[in-house]
Amino acid sequence: MMAAATPPDQAARTGASRTSASRTDADAPTAGASVSGNAGAPRVNPLQRLWLREIGMERLWLRQEPAAPSRPAAAQAQQPASAPAAGAGPAAAPAAPAAAKASPAAAPAAAPAAAVRSGPPPRPPARTREASPDPAPAPTPAEVAERVRDASLEELSAQVQACTACGLCHGRRHAVFGHGGQPTRWMVIGEAPGEQEDRQGLPFVGRSGQLLDAMLASVGMSRERDVFIANVIKCRPPGNRNPKPEEIAACSPYLMRQIALLKPERILVVGRFAAQTLLGTDATIGNLRGRIHRFKDESGREIPVVVSYHPAYLLRSPSEKARAWQDLRLACSQL
Ligand code: URA
Image 1 (cartoon, rainbow, N blue to C red):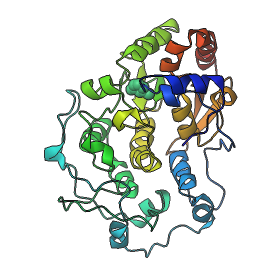
Image 2 (image 1 turned 180 degrees about the horizontal axis):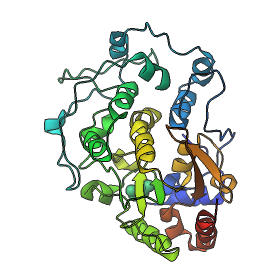
Image 3 (image 1 turned 30 degrees about the horizontal axis):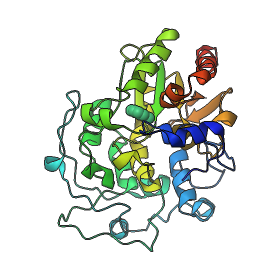
């Protein structure tokens, strides 16, 4: 999905294990780091914008008037699924991590017009839903967005554990909701769970997690106390491959709601994938580092965002730790 150019990215691609290594610090063409929509265009969040771009509908969709309110919800349900149809209902979902209270997901609700407006566009018509023995269709991103709209953090966690919105649910041991202290001073956003995270149901528990903890400790921060760590994608992609645009679109409502609920003072995005996804840009880590970005949450609150290297990349390229230290100092400064 992302083009490669820089030495860091080349190094990343030689990494044996994912832990975001392969998507940590790459370069890609073009820019467009705006996180807010064009005036007059339908409002989409950065992840939705990325998805629109991926499927070549960004211009078309953003040029449109808000989706016609008369568009029947049933028509939504007819849209081909972006992923293999959900096979696992809540009962078939793997055990949730101890912190998560599993609760049956509600039947896919009809997406009201408002949810259709703010959600991602219809699926590309060329694709068709794969046959599945399970009649329950995977909820669309708009339906997921509608379900999470008023969810508390606890409810959101339960929804993530039971999520069947994309095919990643079939291969997971645990969905990884995120973990951290509250009130949340910093939110750290990575890419997706790796093998250890999938096993344990917690984010950043491997070697890169140890490094992340050490980095946070160096500026007096702790995931137990004041940092909440989450990922863009809540379920491990098989073989640690890059998350697909439709997986990002399906998962993005959870991250958006997490940010809105946690109200972090700062967001530290680690790695190329998370930075590009959250900021809705193809710019390189090198271009994104060293300055403050602003992320507008659901309520319009602007949160300062600092971009840094992924810890997995730093493990392979320790000489870059000095730059990561600069990033942490920037995040500590009065923004
Ligand atoms: N890499 C990530 O981006 N997130 C994790 O949780 C673990 C490794």
